[in-house]
Amino acid sequence: MDTVALVPAAGRGTRLGAGVPKALVRVLGQSLLSRAVRGLLDSGSVGHVVVAAAPDQLDLMGREVRDLGDRAHVVPGGGERTDSVRAALRAADRLVPSAGIVLVHDAARAFTPARVIRDVVGAVERGARAVVPTLPVADTIKRVDDDGVVAETVDRSPLRAVQTPQGFTVDVLREAYSAAGDVATDDAGLVERLGYPVETVEGHTHALKVTTSFDLAVAEAVLATAPAELPESRLDTPGSPDDTGSDNSRKVR
Ligand code: C5P
Image 1: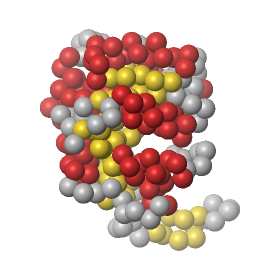
Image 2 (image 1 turned 180 degrees about the vertical axis):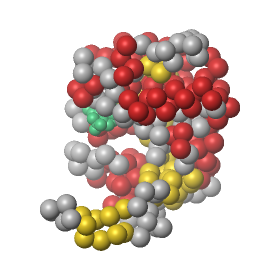
Image 3 (image 1 turned 60 degrees about the vertical axis):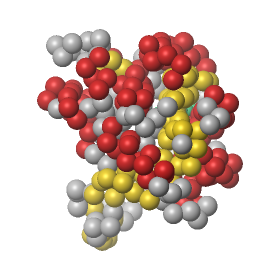
């Protein structure tokens, strides 16, 4: 069964300063977007990737994936993340009509190991309608009241932190998005609302969502110390390991 991955990256990046979308932030010379798309394609389980970009950033984002040829597509996203996923899904129907499995992936999880991507796709191939990679929660979790006073210590044993890519049969994601409102941040959550089971596979610490400059420092350290854990493309990176990255590499927030 063919698999297509959607990467919504049409956010304005207003939190980044200087209008730089997080997907374009570089780590050791290569953007998060380029790394994320390469990682998906190099996993061996994904045939095509559709990136949703802000309409005025189509060229900018297109340049990041141009060398990947006709397996990477960049299409205009919409006003909200939900609109961008919908637009990418519509484009995928047109560009990859044979696809039976669809993944939705964060560009910010640019270091997701191929094993995680393959496990998500494999679970859908074996019959799951929806699959998310998860990790156990390491921190103690407490519920607090309106005054910030602890009301309860939550049993964390059944809790999981959710990563991406999230995987679906194309039919189920289409159904979920036709029932979705305007602001959905969790694609699997939409599927849960339809009453379908959402299965889990084991995530990976390297699939962290790069959100802060600390995360960037962690990503750089991971790249420097554990290349075997990372997508093959890390070895194709134009910047050398000595490359300290561009000026915008500290602006992520
Ligand atoms: O801004 P926020 O953190 O909610 O964005 C989450 C993800 O959704 C980001 O990758 C962002 O680029 C993407 N997004 C999008 N289209 C929008 C808004 C956000 O693809 N209109």
